[in-house]
Length: 429
Image (cartoon, rainbow, N blue to C red; front, side, top):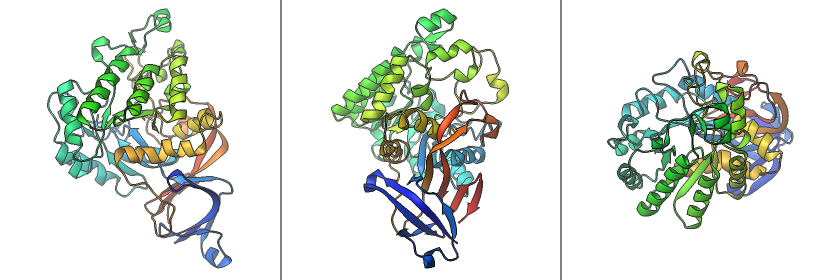
């Protein structure tokens, strides 16, 4: 089968490509790039995407799929459908499932369940057995089965000794250790510690709980030479610590989430549990620092931290409700609305943060726009105005604080693995 994407702007920072073109794809492979003749168009399905941006397929490196164990919240299928609807062709799923992704069997289970979907799923394995921080997980076995990184996500690796060993062993596979930076000894609060938490009478977690672990982990990365990735950076001090580490040549990368660059702790005055996050929403100064970190390249990636929860769980009292929100279907739109359209970042920087850099961090090949390459791409309409409606999400869960929010910018099609998601449906190509 042949399809033609007409009038697109091919944008690929790695290829130094930013030009208007047509694209002919046959059986999922790029056959021709450039101005197409009538002969090229004959018999092909033509899609008009005039002046829409075509990027290497977007990659979200921080997603919770819940399967195995909590299929009532999300499954590999529904999470992948949500990813495609959000503009993603590849995602990496975190290990806090039941059982945890700490054995080759679970890694293979996930990859097998995802193999026929448009969206490629890359498991991130637990760094310690059952994520308890007591014994090292079988890293060699996990990597050979297909794990692309290691994390005890939901908590920092418990001890410096275990962190050292994970950073040392992971170097054999050029895989990152992905850290949720939080010193649990400073409390188990569910909002940022400060004037607002005092005003609301809520249990709070100070920003230094993140900064301390970021500092510890960077020092250990420098000592071992291992690859460290800081997940969902939320404090201005953490951003500065990563910036200084990069200047010293330490192998550290970082990601930010849309909720940490669009929302502040003030949102919790509503007592809406959809604003309950981990790490918690911080101050406007922290938001500004994260945006600056994205502008100057200190923060490498933008990730959703897609965390689906059942409606009945989020409807508990604030203190008992679980942390996290779904984000796969809003991450691109929020990035376009709040960063691109406000001129904080360029479209090239967006492509790096949402496509190129996540693959670099995880040592995964980057799609190219070249004849003979398999088509793995996302088409974006940066000016499409739409309203978030959680009831239309492909995800099983609807826990989003952005419901009814007006957004500018959306993915209009994705292509990968000889499949296309367009006009709200999947088609083989």
